[in-house]
Length: 249
Image: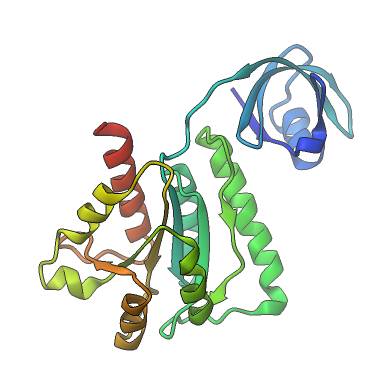
């Protein structure tokens, strides 16, 4: 069944008015008809709805019932990625959304090949947000992850104070055989905790950055004996978090 995220303003009593791209998707792409069912989500609330009316401007649906769901990870995971080149961040956002990330926070690392262009930045963030929305709908999430505008490394350090626990994935730890810190961190987290996990760009971390992260209470850890690409490591971590909190329990 098709799922759509809507604004709270679209809901009035038991009626929902869907406009924009979603209305076009229902009418022109899916070619849905009066009487068909869809799922609408807002503010982590989920409703089973029946389509009442389809026009060129909007789709009107009636709420049949509110559905209880628990599709979100038991902890809130923010993925902070050193700006990678090409479309790697799009992949991280799409697949990371499917795997349950709460938010994505790109940042400018010293070895980031890509330099953030603030003039063109708003369009990129808009595209990333659309990718997250579509991935959340496809994977039956109850909420769309937040996509933050890229920040500097200094700003990243400042923002880390807002989280309960912070981790930095560091390949040198993997080379030295460290394998306990990630598991110990997961074991220490209560349900509902806010976890920030930071990944370097393709060029890796410089020693000064690692030192500053450690000074700001980041736990340095490996992700196993193999060295993962910058777009693979976040997906590994989210999968591990899901396994630990959702399958082991």
